Amino acid sequence: MVFSGSGRIRVVRCRRMVDQAEIHKKARSKDVSERREESEEFYRYFILFPDKKQAWSDLRMLRKDKNAYLQWKAVESIGRAFPHIPDKNQACAALHKFSKKNNIILRAKAVKAIGQAFPYIPGK
Image (cartoon, rainbow, N blue to C red; front, side, top):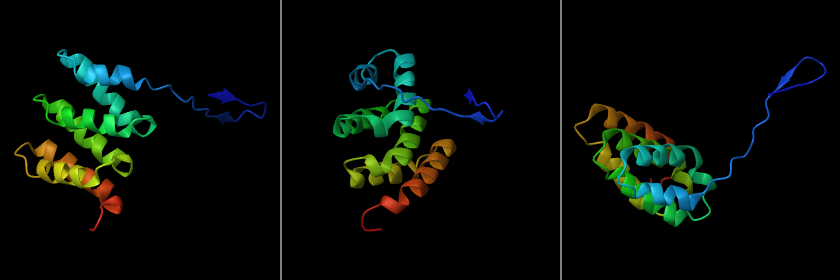
């Protein structure tokens, strides 16, 4: 935040440099805490990644993780990043699959993600 002379508060956002190579490395880590940190990065910065195909590949790995939290973050990331995902049909299929899971939280997140993605779904 920056305070101006008139007493008003102005919010200034800083652009964060995104290290896609580092995030890619964490996506393949055996350490769940690193994968968890990486899942947050996907959610926040997917649109800033220069190599969307690599980012989508990493996100697909994340959605197959056995850790439920990581699956939730993957579904949230797909919904948020949908307009920038190179293979929208594959992303749609993943969301549809998650909407049928037994885990109620995962299903709810998938339904929300489908709502976010809906305007960009090809051939709705």
